[in-house]
Image 1 (cartoon, rainbow, N blue to C red):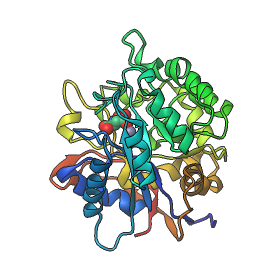
Image 2: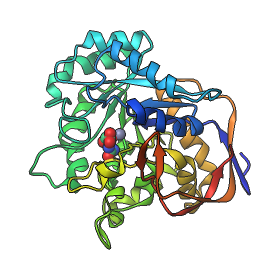
Image 3: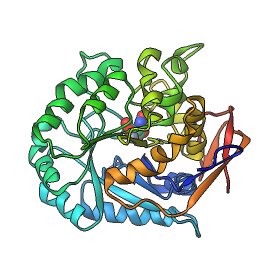
Length: 347
Ligand code: NCD
Ligand code: ZN
């Protein structure tokens, strides 16, 4: 890898993205397809993607949104519900439709109303996934009203994730979008069957970004950004060179009107400049030599998929992030809106 005025790495993948549906799907997909060879596409549509048939149809809609001439492969996921059948999940995996299955604790986040109310309800599904080597992707937050929102990830580890990993040691688990020191400690202490995605926002911001000088809805996502002391574990982990951490943007676009509201939606649209955003953190940490592993190698190795052929290049150049982006008729504020980034993906 050459480091200097240019940064060239193997083509990367995004192991966690929300592409939505309908007109917005067509508006946001090109941004992801421009940056990444493949992406794990989240199933929290309305209604959620809970069958092989629905995932196949959604995959077709995603592919139809990829601009002519771009080479991009969406990897689909199954939304786990209390009543989903192990046979359906396993069949989707065997047929190459479901790359993985996603666990949303019910009401933990956007589009999780149909999620799992008690992990005991899906134990037969998880046992089957462990047996066939199908990855479980976890939104790791408890929904208990008595637990402070800033503690929900740490409490989830204690109450749900650690017991699950102990009970099913063969299960391959991605602890998604980690935000705390406790999550890093858990991932470190677990076996190679546990990996983790880290978002650009959780590398860059702590909760001040959301709360200082006024309430800033465009910095609000779930899991919510934590206090500085906890958040700093994320850049260290991502840039450590450990194979357990990989790129997953959790790009989650919402219309400006849905964010700037008395009850604003959680989710941050970082797809347009995701690589540039990550590169800034790796550079600040003096770890640009670890960027390629995080962006392009650790993810496919965890998922047991081939590494991509080809490369992408970022140039050292000023990149002005626009205040809003028009996603096929829906205005969306991107992460880093109005800021200048110092790397730019070559077209
Ligand atoms: C996601 C969304 O909007 O779909 N929002 C978010 O804040 N990350 C859901 C999720 O991944 O939690
Ligand atoms: Zn997400």
